[in-house]
Length: 167
Image (cartoon, rainbow, N blue to C red; front, top):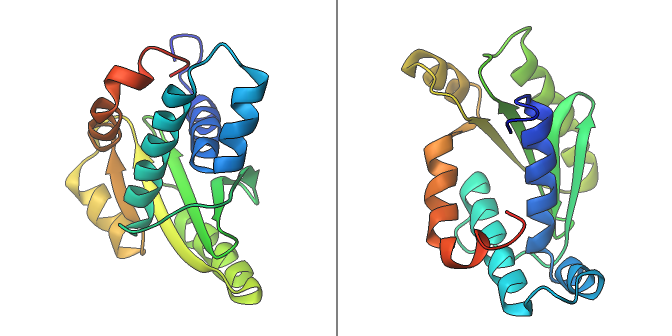
C-alpha cells in the first residue's frame, strides 16, 4: 500500500484473496506455484473463507465456488459465492460516502439478484477510522460495516501461515 494507497489496491488485494476460498482455484494456484506449501495455501483459503463469513454474516458459509468482479456498475467488488450468494463491498480508504452511491449500488445488485436467484449481502469496508455518524448512516442503508481492525483480527489468527507468503 505504500505504492498506491487508493481503494483500487484494496480491491485488488481482496479480489485476489477471496479466490483462495474456492478450492479449485487453490489447486490451480498450487499448480502454478509448486514451491508454495499446500498447507499454507489451504490456510490462506481458510482465512479467506472466514473473511467471507464475516462480510456476509453467514457463519456456516462453505464456499465451493467464488467469482470476484471488480468495478461492475461502479460497485467496488461483487463476490458471487456458490452461484447462490452475492456480496457487494463498497471499499473505502479515507473518503466517505457520496452521491447516494450505496443506495444506487444496492438497487443495482438487488435487481440482478432478484432476476438470478441470489441472496444479496452488502458490506462497507473502510480502512481509516470513521465517525459513528457515518457508520450508523451506512447501516441504515442496509450495509454491514467493517473496519481495518475487523480484517486484521481475522488475518492475525492465521499469521503463522499467511504472513510468511504472498499476504
